[in-house]
Amino acid sequence: MAAPWRLCRRCRVQAPSRISSRNRNICYLALCLVLVTTVLMIPGSEIAHYKYAEGAGKDIFLTKFSDDRGLGEDSLLREQRSVNNEFKVVLLWTDFFGSSTWREENDPFPACPVSTCELTTDKERVAEAAAVMFNARSLNDPSQLPPEHPPWQAGSVWTLHNSEPPYFTFLDLPLYDNVFNWTSSYRTDADIYSPYGGYVKKEPPPPPSDDNDYGDDVISKLVSIVKNSTADENASDVNQEDVQDVGTPDVYGMHDSLLYWMASNCRDRARRYVKVAKIARYLPVDTYGQCGTMQCQPRTQECEQMLSRYQFVLAFENGYCRDYVTEKLWDAYFRYQIPIVSGGADYSKFAIPNSYIDYDNFSSVEELVDHILRVSSDRDLYNSYFEWMNHYAVVRTPVANWCQICEALHDKGRQPQVYSDLVGWMGQDSCPMYSVSSSVYNGFGRYRCEG
Image 1 (cartoon, rainbow, N blue to C red):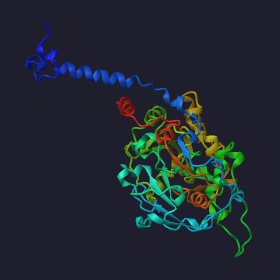
Image 2: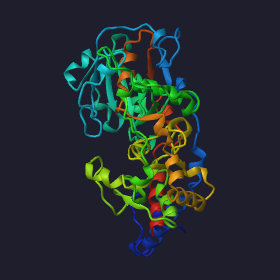
Image 3: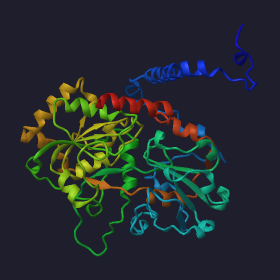
Image 4: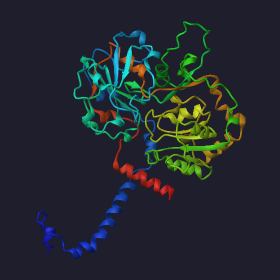
């Protein structure tokens, strides 16, 4: 006969303490084994599966208010649009990783083709704002939003900006359905394409003249690079005053160290620590940041001098996400280094041609290491990775594509819309959403690697 405490689920009859004491440790051990087994069943090959995956298109996640016009016209086709010249206010409602001005020290709009916009952090002006900007990582719950959201016809566009992979966006997304009209992201299919950086073709500087206009929109020119074919075929011309002309020095002689990796996020879906550990079996890898033993305060002169000593940098992204190419690539160019890349983007569309080494193009780590050693010891071969300096210049981009935002706000033909399914929009990325199981697996995998 079963014991009474087993038969009565709702009764306050407890098991004898003798039995509980005897089985407690066994139960804890069993639960731990079940958890570890479940975590380890998560496939480790998912990285390759996600790479270059494409979504079905954002339109299915939108509610559109009219069907008489198309959506997502290329920003380079400005001459075909009807432009509203009314002055537009862009309100930064949240901060961007601690910066209330989103790292803008000056007004960004005077250099834009459509420049009749103003950037403000004054929340008292929300009623007159044509666009209200929200950084996804700065939102905790809907109570942080303005109390009222006027309809599109009232002229207010709420824009959700996200510069991180989906699994680093900790919002309860369904709570924000039917809230945001536009998205601003590193993804090329966002309403506002806001890349971490870019490059353009050089052109001879025009002759000196007081009438020269250097206000070309650099970022909108970058759109053609990633939305069509390969980067080499679509790189745009731009005036020299808009870019950093890096020249053509003998780059080989500028470095006295081999390879480094700098990272602050050690538990990531891309499992960068595994790749770094494999390379470190054959080559010395100096590791900076929270994931290593060497320290360097980012964006300081001392740190830049220290990092610029290296020939190569492991520019591994923390997620295999669609179009996700961060400052890791562009900083390498500014430091005259060869980036060794790994991520979910098609680098032939984003990176400068013949300027990088793709980790995922090698059949083994040994093959990659052999290539690194061969390039590092051959002056001509190493310098060949920098022939792009004769043809291209690297561009630093702002947090958000202000020029495209201002232009879109003045576009009378822009179709009204609202995102009715943010989970669908975020989830169609090539990397997965955040989950507890994946976080545990990543942490356990790093422990196994380091142990």
